[in-house]
Image (cartoon, rainbow, N blue to C red; front, side, top):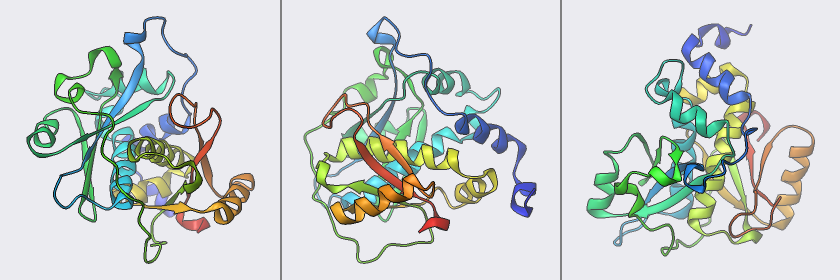
Length: 251
């Protein structure tokens, strides 16, 4: 056991072990109202909207933060809802909010993360037929943010590379980087995941052009990165590789 692993809180270790087991297995219920999903809300004010890359990084951090929060662990108040979602077919739905609607969304069970001035909140998952009305009323699409070029990549933190050629909307990309942060944390040794949690699951999100994407696919093949392959319900073809997450040690 490494020195870091010896310091890991047993509760965190249990939550990480559950995340590392993977997802799905039970499929969708017959009643569409019982389909499980994690709702996410992106704060996109009309004046001075955030940079797309920063907003996606906040969304990615918020999603994995919910999955490793003490309240989803054994006997936690969110455990039953979290496991019902994680053990079915994983879905995330990103919505947008501003002003009073954003403030009201903070009252619903979940975790908000801020990244370089951008804010996103991931909520405790549940059936789509029972979404809290304060979240259900928020629009899923309609506001887009232009892609932005990062001056540099901060390699102190994991990097989530989005395939630029797919042209995903900000909401679709938010769901995909949320999947990526979960997959990456589950693939990490528990000590590394514990250290990442201490950093607030901070990450960098950037777009990869075709040439760089081909290099990243090679990293997935050799096991130094993890990839999200989308089910194809919206925007992209089934099986599309949407995001590749590279841990600090492999950057």
